[in-house]
Image (cartoon, rainbow, N blue to C red; front, side, top):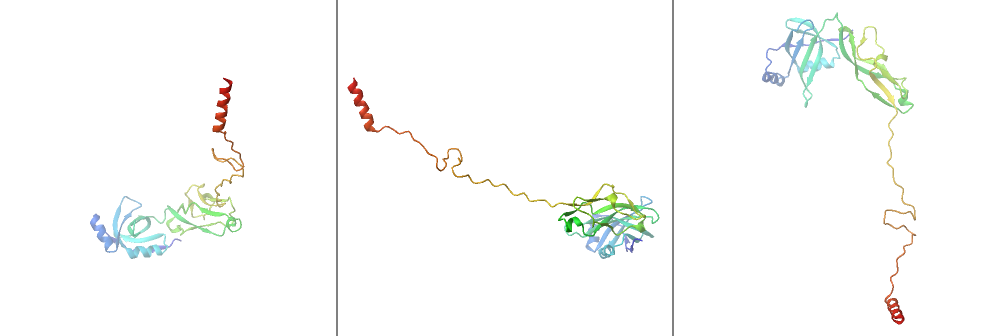
Length: 234
């Protein structure tokens, strides 16, 4: 049976923004209760210390007295301040303990996968929680998934998780929960080999051992000798 925690709350009259800020400055968290059987909603206040105690209790259902009645509720949503991460608002949803509810439950992995300890694989947990349907008093704190037999390439899907007879899976059966894969290999950058001796390099460059020939220009003496020979012929 799920653990129940009695949450002390008090009715709240104002919904003005200025009053909500004042409540928070005084250590009070504004909240709203929503009934499961009607469109009724009731505004309330709860102390920051009371909320902290409720969270630490690991309870799944909560008992409150609001609007003059005792009610069983679940946390519907919790809003946090983006900077301080303190709780600034809570919504509670009333439930009938004799009617099933749909809730999200945390997945806890147990065991050491053989694909990790023996084959050097990497564990990838894709989903942290699954959605189930059950009576409020049967809500589990978490659902354990044994990964001991997982080798490299193996996976566990939501439909493969063993649930007791009181729990019904609502998440898609083919939703991936966890897998063991090979570690990614680092690709070493390719390094160009140095040019071999005598190999032609960039265009216009001359490799070592390559002969360069130049056209020889005639000397001044040669020019005069040719001119003299032409004069004698004439």
